[in-house]
Length: 257
Length: 162
Image (cartoon, rainbow over all chains, first blue to last red; front, top):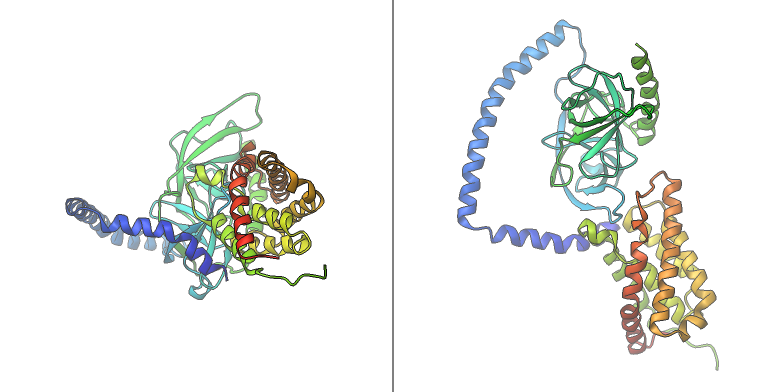
């Protein structure tokens, strides 16, 4: 019922952006075309390597008896609206349950983890971005394998790591990838890089700030990730919260080593 | 005088619909933070102008519609609007007598109350806004109040809403 009204509310911004597309100059287009061609070439070259690397990776994983899937299926969606509440980071996408979207589904963009679906209607879904104050992402430091929980702070481009002891093996510039332990975000997608670590002796934990790699506020197109063995229906924010509780105890375990 | 027939109530619901549209219009962040509480203001006006026709039920239904459009939990906005309606119902005789600037000040207080109720519900749900910015809509609502009430009064007289 709310869909047509939301469509009307979104109309002005849509008109502006389409007008913007219409009046782009020819030289701009040619320049962009050239740039895209160059970029495409680079990407194609990378993809060539990727095929062999995927095969190699798959063989190695087989050797290790890993049952994990290498590839996930994705569905492209467009962001068609944002939540009117300025304090919540929630966007509306144009895919719903008719396309198989489900609650708790992970959302990524071309650069990294972006958010999770919190509400599904037949044609639209609402997605909570990772930067929302109630959002948590289980992550792993790519270099050392150290596990942690990244929490949204309400800022638009960064998150904080929770409960990191001062002795944890984590450095500025470390890449953080999703660890898949929360069963919402698939394994191995980059979340961001550690921007700053503050170790204050008066505080029980270090303050670690993460710079997100996903362009959370500028992307218009996003990817919904489907996984074969994801348990539909259990992937809710509640599960996510429970997992963060578990991971807290995890953190302590690592810290004591 | 015998009981009057109702007239032109569609204009009330139309104004609520426009207010709803304005409150979900996507805006840049810095504007969005100070977006006036349009629905609450429109509800305030109609209860002040026609307290014998519009009251708590009207506020409750408007709040439910707002919840549907904003995707918040059912009853979230209703509670705040009910508080607004109760205050305006109690004060409507005085509010009508006030000069415009005093009315605007009362709008500031009442919308501030509405924002506060919203804040309570939100913090109960675990989302606490980081600063006092959530009171900004009260200020902008007060600034828009004289114009909004003038416009709605014009509409009410033109369409003889009773």
